[in-house]
Length: 235
Image 1 (cartoon, rainbow, N blue to C red):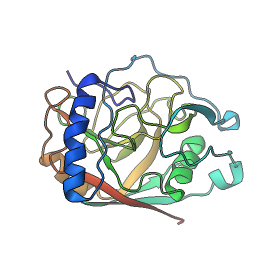
Image 2: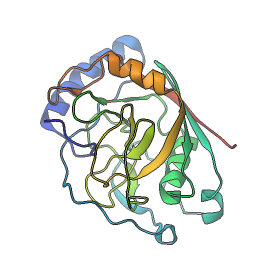
Image 3: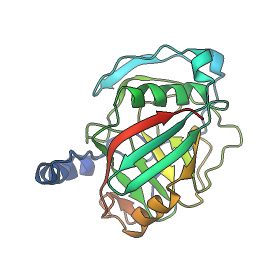
């Protein structure tokens, strides 16, 4: 059974990491294997932006500091473009609906947090996502802080959604996922972006399949998705 996007490590993931480390050495493009295990289906309660606090947490991988929420800056619209080995993916940040989340993503992107990492998990059965954002390859990587859920009331996950992976309510960090095909999930994962270009790139990656290392239809993408850099631009 395919499990929801989460940030809880799985033993098999650690075994597989050794394989991908060898691939990284051969290609000179560091690869990261990340997470994909089950979490509780109970939706987390949304937290108002006024309560946005980034709380120190472990692990602190590729640590870039802890952001201090600035409501004025957080309200400014932006687009994020991920330049990957499979093509570019651009999304519009939902700064009006998930300001705490979009502020964190922008902070990490502007500090090159995602550069030279890769998207570690592709699901092709039951749920349809490509998950990214762990710089360690252990399946439990995080930026050194956590923050509350947002934008969960009535949340749905159609193709083109960008949302946070988590390990339970209010445990957001750096890991996120792209929805490449309409997907049914409980409203427990903060939607914070809408893809405006590159859905075809995600569908090409999905068509390439994955290696079933977690479960049938759930594993590392056969077409490696190396994130070269993330560019933030204003509208």
